[in-house]
Structure formats: C-alpha cells, structure tokens
Length: 393
Length: 135
Image (cartoon, rainbow over all chains, first blue to last red; front, side, top):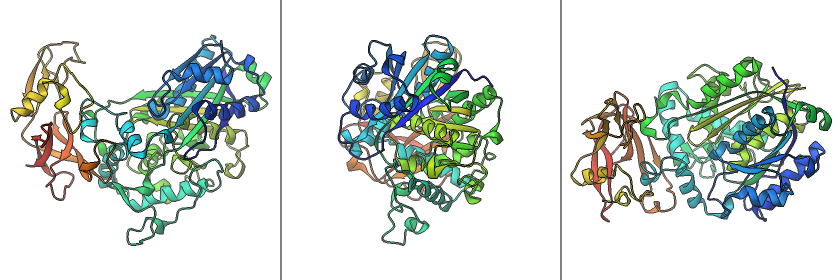
C-alpha cells in the first residue's frame, strides 16, 4: 500500500436549486474551503483540473476562465469530462501527474450549474450522454435508461419496489443531517404508497422507477486538492492517502449491452483494479460512497463492489447493513438521492465525504473510527466506472 | 437520404450508414455485417471494430426476438414532450444481436420474455424509425 499521493484539502458548496451566482463564483466557494482546509496559497498550486458535463452553462473551455478566477494563472490547467464521474476522473489524472513527478500539488475542481436550463432541457442533455446517433432519436433520458436495468433486475433477483423505497428512506435519514444536501426532508415508507394521495415519492417517472427513486438536479461545486508525500506532510496534519484506483468503460448503446438483469457491469472491473492496487478487498472497507443516481443503482453498486453477492444486494438494505451503524455504511451523507447530483461536482463531493470520515470530521454523519474508505462514481448509464480507495495516515 | 430523417428527432445529419434510412423506407430493418470477418452489428457500423475492415454488407434482422427489458417513460425530454408517455425496450435476437427501440403505441401489457418483432415506422411528418411489435 503505497502512500505517495494524498488528499490535503477538501471543499464543497451547499448543493442547491437555483444558485444565485455564476459558475466561476460557484467554483470559488468550493475552492476557498479546500484551500483554507489545506492552508495553501495560490502560489503553492502547480496545476488545476476542471471537471463538468458540457452544455448546462454556455461557457466553452471552462478551465481557462475558472483558473483565472481562482488565481491559478499562469499554472497549467485543463478540462476533464466523463459526465457524472468527471471529478473522480479528474482526481485520477491529478494523482497520475503527481505520481509521475510532473507536479507537487494539483487542484481538482468539479462544478455544475444545472439550473441555467429547464428540467426538460436537462433531461434531453442527459439523454444525449448516451448514443445520439442511434438512441437519442427515440427520446431517451436518464431515468428511462436506468429503468431498463431496474425492470430486468427486479424480475430476476427478487428485489422489490419496497426495497428500492428503503434505499431512499436510508438516503433521507442522512440527507436530514447533511446541511449541504439539497433535499433535507425525511422520507417515510408511506410517502411511496400509490394509494396515498399525498405520497410525494410515488408518482411514476419511468417504470418501475418513481419520483422517489430518482436523485434531483442541483447546482454545486466540489474541490479536492492532491499533493505528493512531502507536501502532504508539510501542509496537512491528517492527509488521506489514495491507496487504489480503478476505472473501466462499457459500450454505450443499449443494444450492445450484456444481460440487463445482472445490472451495470462497469463497476466490477473498476473495483477489481482498485482492490488489487490497494491490496485490499470488500471486507476491508469501513465506509463507502456509491453512485446512487437512482435507488436501483445503489443496489447494483453493492454487488459491483463485492459488498454483496451478485443478485443479492437486497439483503444489505433489508438488514440495514449499509446504515451508519451497520457492517458497511454506504452514503451516510445522503448520497446523490438526498444531496442532489450536480453532475461534475458529484465525484469530488463523494471523495470529500470519505476524506472527512477518515479524518473523523464528518460530524453527525461520522462512522465509528473508519480506516479505509471507498468512492464509486459512475458516469452515464454505467458507461464510465470509477472506484477509488482511500486510507488514513 | 440524410440521416436527419431518422427517428422522432435526429441529432446526426450524416453517417456512412445513412442507407439504413432508405432501407426503412423500403420496409426493412437492417444491420451491417463485416465482409472480411463476418462480425454482425446492430445498430449498423461502417467500420469493423474487430478486424478494422471498412467493407460491409447489409443483413435483415431476424423476424423474431425476445423482449429483454422495457420502461414506460411518463415524461419526455425537450423536443419529445408530445409523445409521452411512451415505452422503450430492448429486444434480444440471440447470438449477441439486440435492438433498442420504442414499443408500438398499441402494444398492450409488455412482459419480459415475450416474443416480439421489429418493424419500420413512418411518422406523419415523414420521419422514419423502427418499433417493436408483438410477433
């Protein structure tokens, strides 16, 4: 377990609907917090990487304008995109640059201001994260894509709509205590009851997924500052080390995908690489952040990461094993379901949560004495899979 | 024919496989098969990722397949609102061949595993696509 590259600073904005500022100001909020966390000045930073999904705001080539606003000119800067996993990939690239000896300290800034456009426009852009030549002409959108997996998975594996509901109930348990989440309310099982006229979570979106099975759009930014071992020790009393990184891709088109009832496959390959690099396995993970853009995605993540056998992810939610006090706490910050999903900021937000957990600074969300944490960040419909493993000093 | 004729709304103006739309107009839903190594592709490809060849032929999809999964979207993205609700699905023809499309509007009670077919469809505005029907 090499301890060569560490996270020395983390920052995140409140995730909100309708941020009253521009993308540069949004980015600065997360940046300021991470820089203060790491006790850095802009002169200490050697390079910056900006991460988002395009076409939500109008700024083309955002790295230049954001680097300028953050005071990181003339250092090198560039832009990274893998839709929902953009900032986790940014961290992977920052890690690689430091490990290669190119830079000592790298800022990775994920951002997204989704409220610049309407919800229907947003669905159209997300749908175009899939294959625009052969699929978008049918009117695709993210909930429908994930619903294709959910329908087949439910039919085969005995997972029920009540199990999916319980994933949302868990997320809301922690969303209530995460002051930066967009959705701060609790969710009760009766909120999913189709016979209850006041059930705010029960409305169908894309069968079998309901309103409560889907995460919300949000505006937000996250910032992760990486450093080599020497700088990490100089600037941060509690560096959190990157122990393992894995990444993989899947074919885009649904017509080329393997068995839908087995769920999204891309995390398995990524997790295998990350575990191997870290010399660790699923049982060693004390706290995890998984990509719960939809409730079904969290169940599939349990299996992709090896927390549960294939087809049996339901047991973890039924046994409450992924609650804070459980065997493997997952998304105890509310996950995407409660935090909201400002696409480019999400990976960095997950990593921030893991870093705070490993520093025992997660406040009311703190898991007891975790040593090893993991982030699982999926881009597109299981298109880009990213798993990163972190350890405390 | 330009590829802007494909689907409810196309996002691609031209593709080397644009003949796909002409074939739809002739009542056929076809994929491509690599002349060099025999790899079959649906949706069609002008280039073979297995052997790098650019020589291909067209082949008609099998008459019947199995409904692998589906979803009924209650909301539609920008530009598709008038169509909602609609059901999208994946058909498995076996041998690694699958198709993604909408179910026909009158397709009642879809069930995973049922036998289905894929047929061309012409919208009232002249756009050409294909849809999944009961076999």
